[in-house]
Image (cartoon, rainbow, N blue to C red; front, side):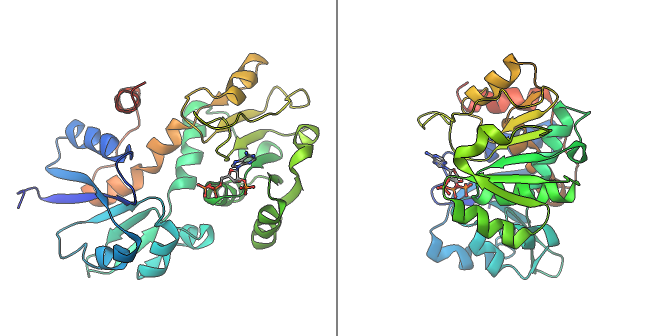
Amino acid sequence: MSGVSLKAGVIGWPIEHSLSPHLHGFWLDQYKIDGEYLPFAVEPENLDGYLRGLGEQGRRGTNVTLPHKEATLKIVDQVDDIAARVGAVNTVVVQKDGSLLGSNTDGFGFLENLKDHQPNWQASSGPAIVLGAGGAARAILVALQEAGAPEIRLLNRTKERADDLAQEFGSPVKVFAWDDRADILAEVQTLVNTTSLGMKGQVALELDLSHLPTTATVTDIVYTPLETALLKNARARGNPTVDGLGMLLHQARPGFAAWFGIEPEVGEDLRQHVLKAMGV
Ligand code: ATR
């Protein structure tokens, strides 16, 4: 027994590269909380047993990362509305009665990151473009819809995946061909890359920004490198840009508050701490 009173953690398979222990650990120190937040490698076949045993292990809950986010949605006793729409859970809280509540805070993290770095940004100011149709895109589509984006132009290399999302999410999502991405930038006020393109070790995202209004906010979920070529090109032509690290930091806030009882703040010191853990 560790003697620690409040316990949470993060599960994935694998889990060793997760930055979550570094960021929750920073907050636990900062707020002098008698708590622990540890990474656990949980094999898919053990997911159900792990989640069901959280309460007995004295844990208040857990974050959930790849590949468990969709499976967790089916295991927990209750899911909140956002997680149900996203189809994935990244935060589990053990309730007073021992039941498990699943939520998805990725979209919250996405919106809070934009508000944090571009306080004047508003989803409602004009059409948005979302590149990609994977799990991250789902969370961001729900967030943009909730925040009042009047139109969301969705593009994906495999168009069928974008069509499926458009059918599921309905208006205001409109699908365009991946190859037309440079031609549909007029009037756009928010541009989001949710693909893995541009990540260290991956192919670059090729996108000619000439038609994008210079007032459009450009953001990337990729944060290695911190400034992707997309963000660099956008910044060079005067667009407001927001890097992806803040989405990771902000998505952690609701879980921390539920498990440890304090609303944590995302500040420059936290960001520097996590960058150091990344080796940047
Ligand atoms: P996640 O669920 O974490 O978002 P994912 O489902 O693997 O991850 O999605 C990755 C996204 O990057 C997808 O939109 C993927 O496009 P496909 O649906 O066509 O696979 C996109 N992506 C990855 N490599 C790409 C490439 N070389 N060119 C264009 N898009 C790419």
